Length: 445
Image: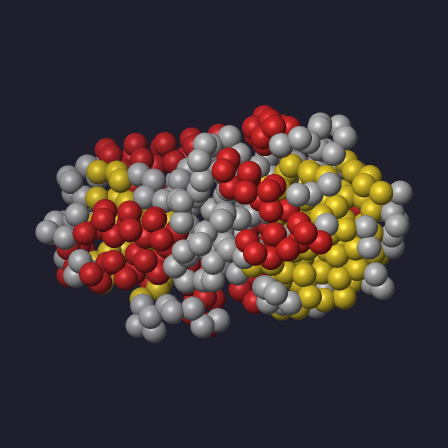
């Protein structure tokens, strides 16, 4: 049985993830993502109105022309979770393949919205929801299973292709969380079972491989956030919080703790509205009376109300944790909203800067503007959604793969993982395959 893996995107950068696995004549594509930093450096770019070739030339979406080298038919497009670096190119590329998009319920709802917003191409691929723990048939000799993982977004899965030559485990993105806030714990037991059954190849996210120790649980971030906000309990001025809009568990905690300190939470920003309403529609415990304003006029009215009724009565939770130019917090920092900062007002960043130059520069500028208005910054009230060094050791001990392909990083970012894997007996160029975008790794012939 011939098995090869095309490393299409996400093997030279953080973002625009896309990988294709061919097992004889059956191909499964994992992720079709956007490299948001390549978009943000341009002024007022609307990706939904752009052609895929222009976005490929910009380095914003994967260059999938290597797919023409794979002899077979695409049977499924499988996004692992709903972050844009994993689903943001589906509207631009999926229509080229006669295959369904298969994902968890939360992920598929976000994909549906991405497709609805697409204005350049007609995307009519079937959208198929599959829960973690379920399997589906891919061709005659291959099955696909979803294993539940924990990440900084709900509904994340690790897809596994079961072939006669062994399993192929696609490991982007995850952290090992035994005590999450809204979901089941990480399914380490299933990964250990896969290791016992035999894993031919493991494709792994290397984002935090160079950071020592283990990634803390979301429950620890929740307690850090509670401690931070309750320390403001007697403060009567303005408090503003920002986090990843897609981080439903974090938003849930912010809403709960705002009420604990006697403030009314209000979510502001289009992406806040999108992710939170999607989670509520799917049964996550988002309060029915939570106020969420995504459109410009409703946001402006909410800011005026906050100023008129007193900043001390509210906790605005806004977009803009990376300093994105058009996000709410950046506009507030530029004094482009009715919200006015006073000396000593608090801004809580319940997020980490994504380690990429565009993000780092934008975040620095946003913080400088906030400080110029007198705001005091509370930084990194957060835990990462990616494995650190100890988590990678745990996964290799559990899965025990015959081959490893590091992903989700530049070559310099992959280096710590290569050192880690080599310390566990793997050899670069033999069973540890360092690839680039557009390459094909032959596993069996």
